[in-house]
Amino acid sequence: MLAGRIESLRKSETQEINDRAKQLMRDGQDVIDLGAGDPSFQEPKVARAAGIDAIKTGFTGYTEAGGIIKLREAIGQRYQKVFGLDPSDDSILVTAGAKAGLFEIMQLLLEEGDQVILPRPYYPSYPAQVRLSRGEPVFARGAPQNHYLPSVSEIEEKVTPRTKVILINSPGNPTGGVYNTEQGEEIINLARSEDLFVISDECYDGFTYQQDRFWTQVSSGYTKGFTVGSTSKIFAMTGWRVGYVIGRAKYMTELEKIQSHFTSSPSSISQKAAQAAFAHELSLSESIRHEFKRKRDLLAQELNKVSGIDCPIPPGAFYLFPDVRDLLLEVGLDESGDSQFTRVLLEKSGVVTIPGSAFGMPGYLRIAYLPSVVVLEDAVDRIKLAIEQW
Image (cartoon, rainbow, N blue to C red; front, side, top):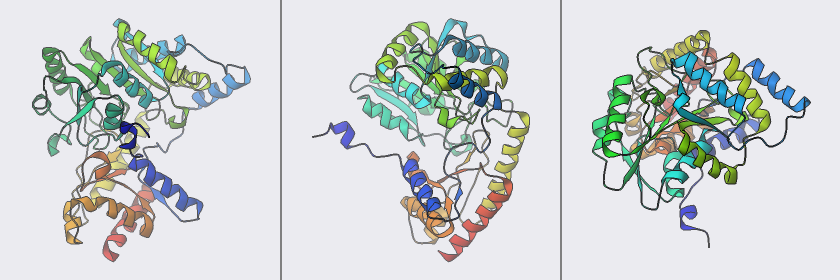
């Protein structure tokens, strides 16, 4: 008999949809993928070259469990150059992707029954990782005008004597919401007053389109804070599987112990590639950011022309999170019909989207505006036709 916490676990719905889309592609169907959060541009050439060089020179063995020193230094230098911060009071742990870092933090902090306040809608792995760590997820939902990122008052309402951790995600997946400095510091002050840990998932930190919006938890100096980042989005290095955690040295030492038994070290080859990316590229170029903003605006504008769809324009990440509840009502479904709607779009029009129910928010869709403008225009035409035929 399997452990109960495993039996109640289901495969990520986003992964299930992506797997189905890949199957249709293998079968020869023309598919437009607006589902996967896999950037459409390539990883930096210097990163690819560094990975190849690592293989050629035999840098292919185990490294330090917490990552090679030069990569950790390069991450710290990026925070100095991009954000004007010196994380010298903190330590940096390199992980096998941001997911591994998040899970290791949950393992470090949670005892059975401890509560973790999560945003709703949420990245699907958050509640799964909390439950796998024997914790209890508690959800805080923000206002639409803040793209559903919970405010400090909405988080405070969920605090109980069992609360151990507040997890925030900015820029947010799936909504694209972004905390500004005032909002972020208010959450830190709440955590400080309640003696809570804060985990800040900032994997999309390069994807912001308003200068005054983004706040990084590193800037707070909070001693019980963890900042999680990744090379997957800002450098399009999804398959290289390199993430990192920034936090106080005493916690990083314990995390490294956990990692030594969990994944050992991250891939040595990937670490060399990531080191080159952090040293030479730092973050998204202005041209790439401008192109993403252009695609965001175009796609939102076109979706808002469709009856029953309300698509706000978010300040960050590369997702739209349109409200399709009125559209579902028009075809005789309630908000839980979002999964059926995404299947119709995939099977009938070859457009991959993710239902909001996968993020704990039925009646919505997550749409990644990653393909070219021409492909996005084709996708909108297909969506409109599928709705008309439906």
